[in-house]
Image: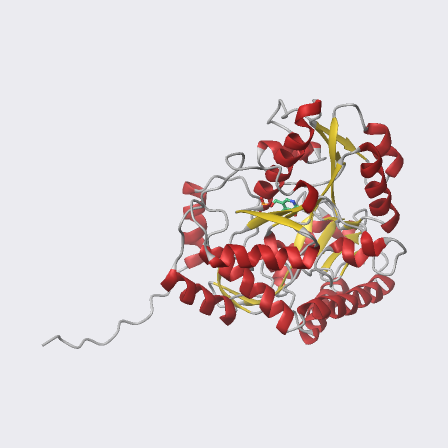
Length: 428
Ligand SMILES: *Cc1c(COP(=O)(O)O)cnc(C)c1O
C-alpha cells in the first residue's frame, strides 16, 4: 500500500527574481519589460507571483477582448481540441469557412485569408497590392508617418517611424510615408509606380490618433480616381474596440456618404482570437481572387482550433453586446479622464480615442515626471502599476488604455480612482 505522507509546507521563495533571472539568461532582450512577473488573471484582473492584484487596462495590448481566462474560450478550446486542432490547408473544415463568412458578413462582400499575427496579415496585404499592380509595373504602397504595421521586414518598411527601422537597413523597397490625415500629401506622393495606400483607422502605437471622416472619404475617392487599392490596418483599432466592428464604421457613422465606404483590404489580429494567436485579412469582392492557388499560404493559418475560438469570441461579443459596452464604458472613461485633465492640468494635456482605445497625453515638461532618465509615460505607467493598475505606455508622453471589451463600469471607475490618487500624490 502507498504510504500516506503529509503534504510538505509551501516553499517560500522569491519566484519573481528566479523567473526574471531565467529571462536575463535565456530570452532575447528585445523588449523593454516592466518589473512585473504575472501569474494568472480573471476578467480585467491580474495577479502577480506575490499575490498582488492589478486592474488590467492594457488588455495584453488590445488582445484580451473577453478579459483573462474567459470560460467561453476555455470551453471552446477543450471541445474543439477533442475534435480537430490542426489539419493543414490542403483540406476544408467547418470553423475556417464559418469564420470567413462571419467576418465577411460584418464588413462587406469579399473573402478572408487567415494567418497568425498582425504583421503577417499586413504582409498579405502587401502581396495583394503587388499582385494587383504587377502587370502594370506598379508596386509602391503609400503609408502614413507615425504608423505602425509590425516587425517583419516588410512591415518595418511600411511603418512610418525611424526608430522601428533603425539598425535594419536597407529597408525593403516600395514604401513611401506621408503625414497622416493629410489628403493633399497622399495625392502628391502618388507616382506611376503606386499600387495602394495603407493606413490605420486609428493610429495606435504613436499615441491614439483617429483618422478624420474627410480623410477616409477623400482617400477612397483618390484611390478610385487613381486606380489604387485602399488598405486599412485594423489590427489594433478593429474588432469592436471602438464600439463598431471597424473603426471606420464608427468614424463615419452619420457622415453623409459614410454608409457606402469600404476599403479594398483590411488586416486583423490582436482581439480576433481573444488571446489565441490569430491574424486575418479581408479582401473586397473585385480583388478577392487575386491571390490565386499557390500564391500565398501559412502552415498554421486558420486552424480549426483558432477559428473555433475566434468564432466564439465573435458570438460572445454579439450575445453580451460588448460593442455597446465598449462604446459606453469608453465614453465614461474618456469623460472621467477629461475631468482629471481639468483637475490636474499641470500633468495632463489631452485625451484621444474612440471606445476602449484611449490615449492620455501627459505634459512631459513637468518636473514631477523627471527621474532616473525615464520618460513621463514610463514613470506614470510604473506609478500606476505600484498602485495596482496596468496601462500601456507609448512614445515618451502617452499612456494607452486598451482594456477588455467587457470592462465593467465599476472597474472603469476604480481605474479612474487609482489614477486620481497617483496624480494627487505627485510633487507639485
Ligand atoms: C500590433 C500591431 C501590428 C502587429 O501585430 P503583430 O501581431 O505584433 O505582428 C500591426 N499593426 C498594428 C496597427 C498594430 O497595432
